[in-house]
Image 1 (tube, rainbow, N blue to C red):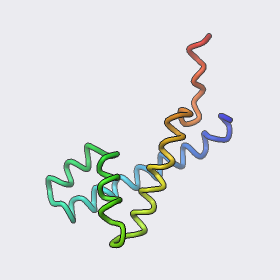
Image 2 (cartoon, one colour):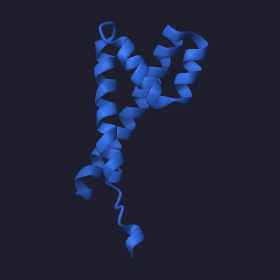
Image 3 (cartoon, one colour):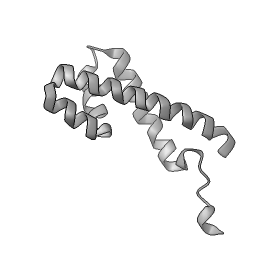
Image 4 (cartoon, helix red, strand yellow):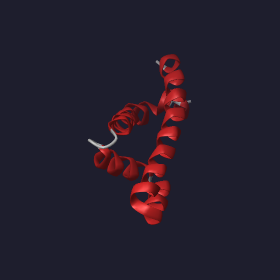
Length: 89
C-alpha cells in the first residue's frame, strides 16, 4: 500500500500548496488584509471558509478546495504513504 500512496501523496502536497496560495490570494482580494493574514496562518479553516464562500462565484476553486479537504482525510489516516509501524521494532 505504501508504494501506491506515496506518489499520490507527493502530488497531493504539491497541489495543496498551490491551492493554499490560491486561497490566500482570494482572501486578500475578497476579505482584505486581515482576512488574508488569517488565511495565511490558518490553512484548513481558511480553505473551508473560502470554499463555502466561493461556491457559485468561483466554482473551479471551490471544487478543487473541496477535493483537497476530502483527500486530506485518508492521507492523515494512512500517514501519506509513510510506514507507521517503525515504532514497533
